[in-house]
Length: 80
Image (cartoon, rainbow, N blue to C red):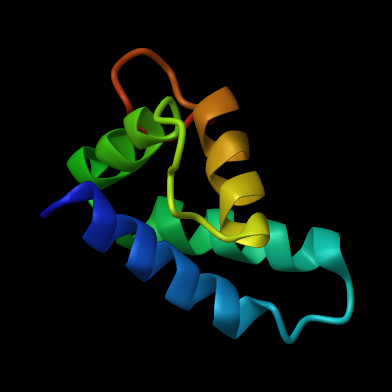
């Protein structure tokens, strides 16, 4: 799957959680959804995509993916 498709999917998730009244709840919901339902490879590819100048991510998904990146060990799995 291409980085553009992953960004589009993350943005779609962001649109769903964008209805949350609290911004922090929306970001946490997006990050949680990606961590639970995306494969490790998909997460790693999207996180690597953050290094590109134009990630294509909207504001909420961008923050969620940054949080995932900060809490992802070298192997790419979720940190617990």
